[in-house]
Image (cartoon, rainbow, N blue to C red; front, side):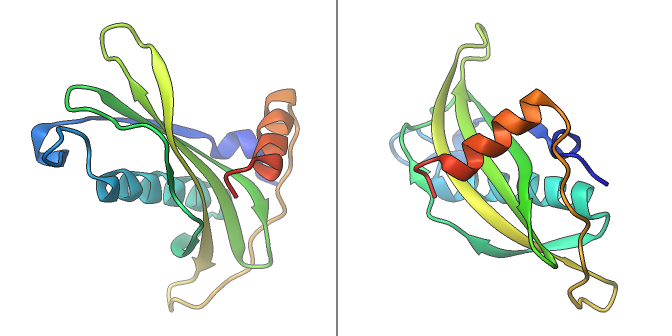
Length: 146
């Protein structure tokens, strides 16, 4: 059975001028795209199947990410249904020189596992076998971002 920590993925994007709006901050759509891609990777790692986005909970943009910053996207599976995989996603603004981070965006995405004919298929049960996994799952289930 896949463990929550087996699904943890962290990815970085260097924010370039082509990612930015007229305020020199990354477009929210770019952040959402990066979150969706990384979230799908966590879902597929968990399900062992292709996964498609079924739902995006509200996106909460708390702080901008500026050109020259690094956007850090964090993703992990925290719950499952019969064919669905719930993924917690957070984005951070990171200073590439110091590594200092600040949370910027949070959301929850739901993916559905599909077979080669694009029909939904069952997913395994999620196991949480570490203290870090328990902490992450509890945080995802109890947060106000939902």
